[in-house]
Length: 345
Image 1 (tube, rainbow, N blue to C red):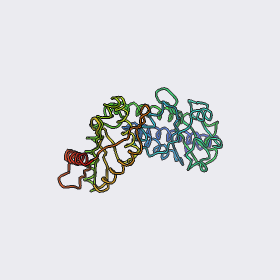
Image 2 (cartoon, rainbow, N blue to C red; image 1 turned 45 degrees about the vertical axis):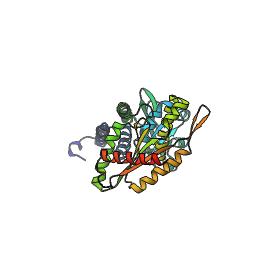
Image 3 (cartoon, rainbow, N blue to C red; image 1 turned 90 degrees about the vertical axis):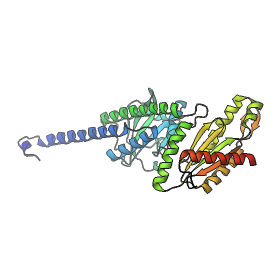
Image 4 (cartoon, one colour; image 1 turned 180 degrees about the vertical axis):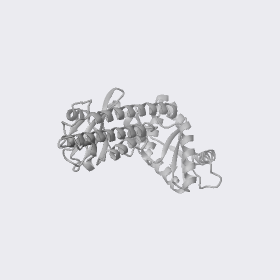
């Protein structure tokens, strides 16, 4: 005990007050550090990953995750997180269930006993999480879901606890997520194809340059597929341009679903697409191209009672091939191989 307090009869309570003040100072410092670290994130996935990791580390929690309701307004956020590869666990909850369990609270909800809240806990942790706090997340002035702090210690979060710092964290998390969503939407306007929603040619050039640089640095192969629809003009002539647009959207979605998370699908121009395949040899990429042709052929476009099959030709190129060390050379070579296949089909 510090000597300065030895003459006070209530020195123990004073020490307790000082410890309480020091604890609050540590919490405030942690909140400041979290805010500083997450505000620099450039996309939603990076923001969510950083937020979850920092909160778990700074406050020594067992698990931290996000719950988003399944309302349509949340779909763009779901898509952003999925496409950008968010590593943190995300629970999607029916809106009715979430509102029933939380009462639609816009302030932190402290839950000493998680029985009855299993729907809001990732399946892998449902038997372990004994107490949790749900911090409301607001996006575009609406309740989108919650940031959940989970612990294996029953009763850690009791309903009579002071939630002042949790309220601060909820506000910072909501403001950061809202800002990340806005930045992501602006970025997508410049980098997304307006028709298919796939990344556009401009974004392809940026991604391809990055992947080539990474390929050289780590001495890994990089391949790409150049895809062109078969008989697309006839589809437009027979069924109309609206059907042609639907055909391109359907094909783009089929391609996106069939590739790995590390791969990227782009609309290059017109009825042409490019798939960038990091760490794939030309031989592997050739098999991938053939597999994609087989799989999309099984998912025809249903259009006004017509069953329109998907069909495309594909050219393959990889930087392991002599002279194909930059993006232009790769695309030019793949384009040549594409038209060789078209002549054979």
